[in-house]
Amino acid sequence: MNTESDKAEVSTIAQPTAHSEDSIEALSAPPDGGIQAWLIVAAIFGINVVQGGYLVAWGTFQAFYQNSLLRDKSPSTIAWIGSIQYALDGAPGLFSGRLLDAGYFRTTLIASSIAATIANFTIPECSQYYQFFLSQSILYGLGSGFLYTPCLGLISHWFDKKRPIVFAIVTAGNGVGGAIYPVMFRRLESTIGFPWTMRVIAFYQTVFFLFGCVVLRPRVKKAQNMPRLFDFHGVLRSPSYISYVFATFLAFMALFTPLTFMTVKAERIGISSDLSFYLVAIVNATTVPARLIFGSLARRYGALNLTFVATSSSVAFILAWAFVTNASTYIAMSICYGVLSGAFLGIFLVPVAQMGDVHDTGRRTGIQMTVLSIGALIGPPISGAIQDRDNGFSMVGVYAGGSF
Image 1: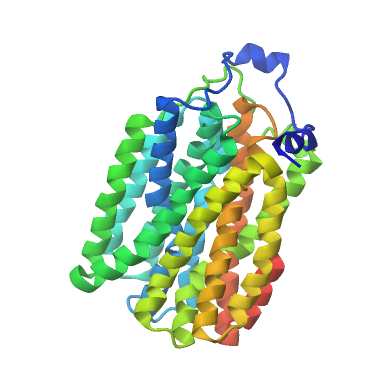
Image 2: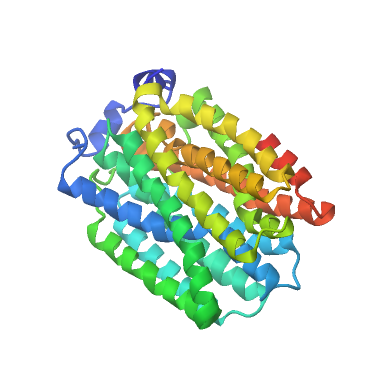
């Protein structure tokens, strides 16, 4: 099945109407290339490196907090910081996606960049759990959440036929950043301490945010007659859309469990602390080629088909990751999980982008990201509670594999 068949399968989604054509300025087809379009890709990729990579590198912070600053807290309690970060990356999607459709992309971009930057500069001043929770979880999570969905929705303004590979490229930034942060954190924290490490990260992110604020521009003009915020007419009448969003919700319940506890389990089975910290970076790095390969294959075989292949295969490696106790086998299983999860993350938004009119991309993507945020919110703490009760990871693997 190819991309065209994916579009046919979901043709029940609301398409442009005469009313929408009257209310929205008509545009030619997306250019699918050119200097401006590829600068858009570069800017979104850079934002995903520093913002998305920061989120998927949470396992590094989980292990550090468990062993030092928050050692008096349970793994499940600490995991709430990361899980709410994950959740808030998508939870505002319903609102931020509509802001894109309504023509407020630039305002959202600038405000979100400022919020994330302030959060990063306040984290070094934290010493209590509630302070980390407010800064790293709530403030940074909201800043990244109002940034992520509009940036991904913007791709549909500039690309059509090349959309799957462009989605793969920009989301590969998450894997690149996820490989950089654990190494950066480990090297800097041991030499300049935690507070200055976080300040360096803050300056590093600010550079990419500024580039994004200069380059990123919407191409589709503001709609004159926007549907009401909670008007789900069309999308919620499509069985294809509903089924797909629910399936990805289940996947997100399990997706971040291995990344959250990868370092903790590595140390538990005897892997050195140096290697266990870098394991998160290694696994995130393996997601990059997987995202790009599956993104390029999606045009031929269909993003929907490849998403099913990636999620189905991930189950086996999540179970293996949880049960193995040999160091080399554990590393191998972790890398295999990274490849398959990267393949899923690189293309899971493509089917939704294809399920209707470009002027409504923000709403469709935003609804999906809001629903997925619930899975990301509850998944890691449930895993942490299971691990805390069992003092092991076998049942964690059964839970995560069953959800995926």
